[in-house]
Image (cartoon, rainbow, N blue to C red; front, top):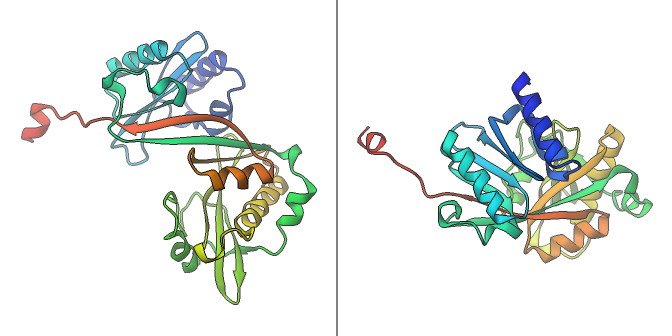
Length: 257
């Protein structure tokens, strides 16, 4: 981490002390530039393939969110935005993406893991990270974007019956130390039987054993079944967000090239 990135993170934390997204989800190594306004904080980062620059703004006042987006965009043009869902509808057209993802973040503190969750974790397996059945099952998911063999995954948990994989979930670890659940999926034939809850519970318990202070996850806001599942395990929803890629900006020079 550079001196500037340490300073940037400090500025954001000063603006929004205790913000769960900022505390647990943000990788300071990826921060390019920062702008703040009172209790509103914003920053830019490049995607892993370095082809898109995204701006994230934390705060509910649409006018201040807009001002921060314009400040960041004036320094280095941005390609995508993530903002609080409460502010998105009032943003000007220049920062409203043609298509957005409406999602939410959930958090479970390690000290809130119940005996019921620990008991639910039994009957699950830790899978080989390259198990071909993982990707076969994830074909049933509309949101999974991390698959078997992904380098950031530290473990996969599954429910197996007679060699068949019925449910699966993966776990990453954020720079903050938070465990992050990803790619949760259950075979459609076996939904409603508690298998997704079992694999998520197993990863929560494993994360606690690793010493992770919290476990986090992100899901589509409209996923009612997911809400019921994660609430039953003990997760708490902290906020809803909207993310979207803005209309590509192609200059005459770039177009000609």
